[in-house]
Amino acid sequence: MFHRKQFKLKLPKRTLVLGKRTLLMGVLNVTPDSFSDGGKFFAVDTAVKHALEMEKAGADILDIGGESTRPGSAEVSAEEELRRVLPVLERLRGRLRIAISIDTQKSAVAEAAVKAGAEIINDVSALRTDPKIADVARRHGLPLILMYMRGEPRTMQKGPFARDVMRDVADGLRAAVARARKAGVAKWQIILDPGIGFGKSFVQNCELLAKLPELRRLGYPLLVGTSRKAFLGAILGSTKKPLPPNERVWGSATTVAASIFGGAHIVRVHDVAEMAQVARIADAIVAAK
Image 1 (tube, rainbow, N blue to C red):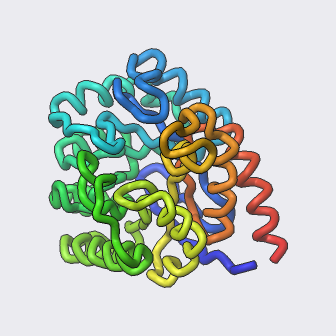
Image 2 (image 1 turned 180 degrees about the vertical axis):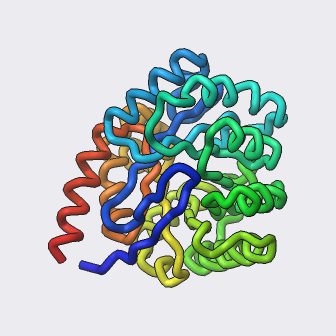
Image 3 (image 1 turned 45 degrees about the vertical axis):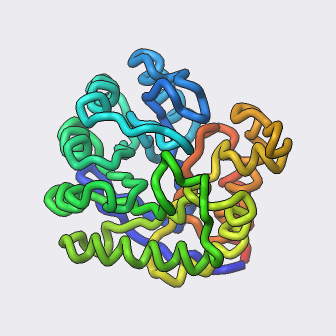
């Protein structure tokens, strides 16, 4: 079994060690149109309750997003995004002990969320939508997650897909790092995400997981998010009749284990309690070498 490189992630209120064990990032979609839960946590009270439940279940990081990036989704304004996430952040201030990440493509949202307590910025566009996100991360000295998405949410699953997905993703992540570094973001601040499901075919998602160790050569911590995604529904059902998102727990568990065996430092998940068990066993196997 491989040796997973360790990194120290400095946050304003804590330091996270990446690589000693896999960290769980719990997903909180404060949207009415999420693919995974269909707006189940759109109400502030429900969102806050779920956040606290995920912390109790074993989440190390809470990732809050106010804009759906599911295939075919449309962009919302920064004002609407803030209207969704700020009340949740304000209600969680002082109640949540784990770190909060803001999932956004907009610098205005990132800035306001950081002032409301977020300590990590998660940009699925890797600074292509709004390069000023890099300035927010630099000024506040915050970790910045850069995800490679081929295309944009509205059209990304319509293709054409890359001929060589590993080369496409590696080149895309290198370009993302170059944008961040040129903007003054320090190397230690950067985390890379290959973007499972974002502009890749179902087969390519499996290939990415199988060849994930190749992305370790980029020299940055890796975050992988496979939880409940469409390729799992297609494999477990069919492309014409996929298994519904809420029935993809065990499929997600398999890909979380594969991500850890491939070198992921953080896994982004919806079902925290179940994936905490998966990560604990997978970590034990990795540690046994």
